[in-house]
Length: 85
Image (cartoon, rainbow, N blue to C red; front, side, top):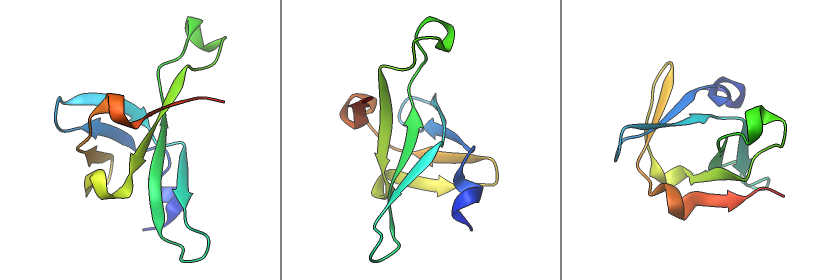
């Protein structure tokens, strides 16, 4: 699978069956080329006009399954939230 194929896939948390969003970016180690984390934006503020408060940075080890349309992860959403810069 190519990295560009991961972008846009729906990410679902299997612990609470909540849709977290869509993959918009990937964090990887440039020396080894290994994927470190998937980045999924959090919910938008004021219809998207004011940006976002946080994003989910999901470690690769938390990914359970990558299917043709969705990615299942097992996370505690509060632990993987990072403030947007």
